[in-house]
Structures are given as C-alpha cells and as structure tokens.
Length: 295
Image (cartoon, rainbow, N blue to C red; front, side):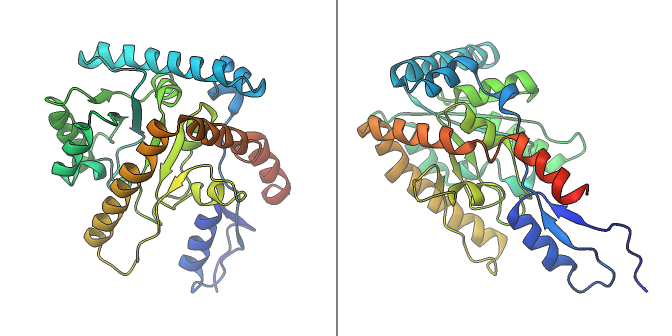
C-alpha cells in the first residue's frame, strides 16, 4: 500500500507540472500534481525610472534610461575586467547558476562562428557571462574557468565574478538580450528572464520553463524562442541543433531588428515589459498558492 505524504503537490511551471505527472504516473499513492508558475517581485527588481518612462509611454525617456543603465553595468565590467563596453552596442547577458543542463558555454561551442559574430563591425555585439557554480561541481567550475580563458583576448566578451542580488539586478538592467539556453525539459521554471523583461531586456531562450507560457500569452511577439529539437536525439545532437538555431536566430533576426529597424526593436521591448506583468509578478503566484495549494 502506497503511503501518501501530501494531499497535493505542484510543479513550478505548466511544463514542469506535465513532466512531473509523467514521471510519477506509474507509482501508487501519488497525490495530484498541479502547477503554479514561479514569479518575481516587480517592486524589488524593476528600475523605478525605467518603469516610470514605460508607464508614461515616453519612449525617448525609456531609451535614455536604458542607455544609462547599460553604462552603469559597464562600469562594473570595467572594474572587474578592464574592458570598456559601449552602451550603443547590442549587449547579450547570460547570468545564472552554472550547471551543465543550463549550458552556459553553448554559444561559444562553434568557436569560429562565435568569433565571427563578435568581430562583426556592421552589427557589433557585446556579451557578458556571470554566475556561480556550486563549490564541489568541478564540471561547472571548469566551464566558468574556460569562459574566462576564452574572454581574455576578446575585448567585447566579459566574464564577471559573483551573482549576488546587486550584480544580478545590474545585469538585468543593462542587458538588451537575456540569453537562456537550458536543455529542454530540464529547467523546471527559471525566473531570471522575468526580471530581465521588467527592465527592458528581450528574452532569447530555448522553449523551456516559464518562457513557454510567456511566449504564448497572446499573438504579439514578446521574445525570441528557439524551436524544440527532438528529445530522442542524444544530448550532443540536441546541443548541436540548439546551437545552430541559436546562432541563426541571433544573426538573422535579432541583430537586424536591433540595428536596422530600431523602432520595431523598441516596440518589442515595450511589448515584453507590458506582458511580463501581471502574470509573472509575485502577487499572482502568491494568490495561486493560497487558493490552489494551501486550501
């Protein structure tokens, strides 16, 4: 006889609920598994001046403040690495816990294409990596060290040490593109992209965790999401296909949008900021826990 320890359980995104139910379906005595998607507290994370410009529909002020926030982040880049980044250049940020399934180094694995991307003077790119591996996760530590090694001779690539609350907020405030490329379906939810969107960064992600729900909120594009690759492939094959799709989308959609049609870029930024709340603000999440789980 199975022993039921809980009356109800929850996944932290719609997909996580689906995966969890499938994982436990053969076991007796399992309680119902629902989902309550994670969220973040906008009052804590969102830059007040940027948000004010957005609420006032003042695009000029929005762009001015975003540019200032980029410059403030680049002061940190200069302090830590000695590199001088330009607030007028599209800036990609990958920042979160270093873990194998999150693939922090994915964009660098086709090294020649990565160097070509960072050497493009017509549509220049800056990229920042930050985050922390667990102390005993030697694979993640090696990954962090390798990215640092790669960055040494690349003036527009920086790896920052640390990922505490202040730096985390600065990274989101200063990012144009928030890169998130976990191996689908390994990311239960993820939340960093929510707070990035609250600060005018556009999400660029594999179709996993919370992003799957965000991109499907309505018919207006609010992010860039990669197609799902066949899960029956080996992890190496999945990684290769995700990398090719990632670079293809970056080179042929994101960069042209940012540099060639800036008005459309800022339309996308504002759509992202509009749609991230109220659904991905913590008020909705707390209300759902109260009504659906702690009843």
